Image (tube, rainbow, N blue to C red; front, side, top):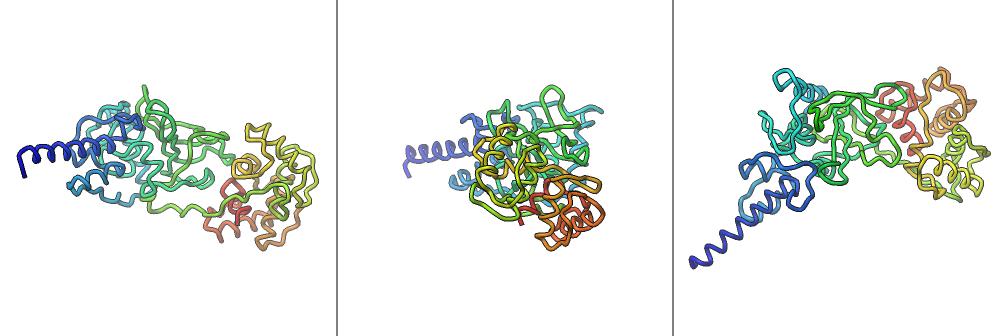
Length: 350
């Protein structure tokens, strides 16, 4: 090989490594980063993100990223709490350009990477949301300790990820979470990210958490004009529970479509008259022993469709609670007798 050819080969290899490094740091040069790059690392560290792996292998370096070790829910939360006091008794400062003494970036995705035991300095927010070897999309009702809520849209000033700890009450209107945020650093506080209709925050389950229940696979059915059956009747009862006047006859006609559009418009949804996942999520309400009304009737007829023998009277008594617990146990859900978002989705989607 001529000296000139050898020089060109070295330049090509260097360009490939540089390109892979930039991708591994979240695509900074292309403006794709969830958070800015950390302080300079060795090539083996900085090309750690999955996005850069293929380019490096093609360059002949053979670099790969080991699978993350299994962690428990308790371990994720314990690690999250360490950064609250790691800075001489105070929180780890937020930075998009610095790496903490443990080797992880001091931004939100670096913090989450630390809690999950991922490679250092950590994948970015887009990687956490999009890489199915790291996370799996779930529903809000399936959130367990250690799961994530991620906004992977926008740029490095708007993207964010937080660690779910637990719901603050049975209505699931807010939750406790750990996060690494600008100005404040590591915090542990009550949040509502992702709970409003149309939020860019979506829930994800880290695949290397070893002790959480596998998220249910049932999905919301899509109902429209012409549909019929138990799911339609449940939707009609739920619309009635939200103040809409219609007959719960299990037939999706023009009258039901009109009420669906009115509900959607009132709740900031696309008013197309079709009941899909977003409309279902807005329609349901948590019911439990002592509750009464049309939302309870909707749950009772769904339980009956699953084999229960309840009187659909709209009264959530001990028999209904027992039927709910039996259904939850059969589906691998928390058998608490409460019909919340996850139980609703599994009831209607099964």
